[in-house]
Image (tube, rainbow, N blue to C red):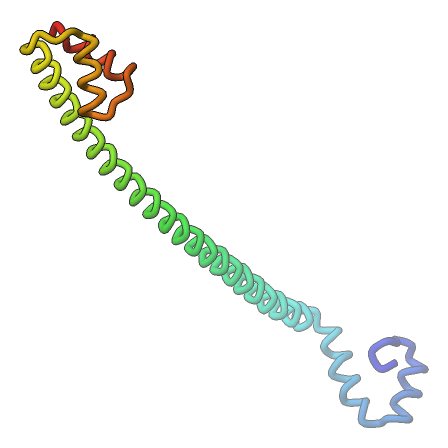
Length: 149
C-alpha cells in the first residue's frame, strides 16, 4: 500500500498506523516531484543495464572466438593429416615411377637380348612373362612398343 496508492486518505491512515513511513514517504514524494532526479535514477539504471549488456555481448563474442579457435585447430590437425597422407602418396608414386623405369629398362634389355639371339616376338613375349612376372597381354604390348625401337 505504501508504494501502490496515491489516495491521501489511505496515505494518512498508513502513516497513523506506521509513523516511521512518514520520512520514507516524504523522500519518495520529493523524488517524484523532482523529475530530473527521477530521470537521473533511470538514467543511471540504464547506464548499468547498458554496461551489463555490453559485457554480456563481449562474453558471448569471446565464447564464439574460443569456439572458432577450437574449430580452426581441428581443421589444422585435419589439414596436417591430409598433407602427411599426400606426402606419403607422393613418395609411393615416386617409388612406383622408379620401378616402372627399371621395369622398362629391363624389358628393353630383355627384348634386345631376344632380338640378338634371333628369337621371334612370341618367344620374346614368353621370355618377358617368365623374367618379369608380367601377364601375356602386358608383355605383348611392351614387345610391340620396343621391338622396332
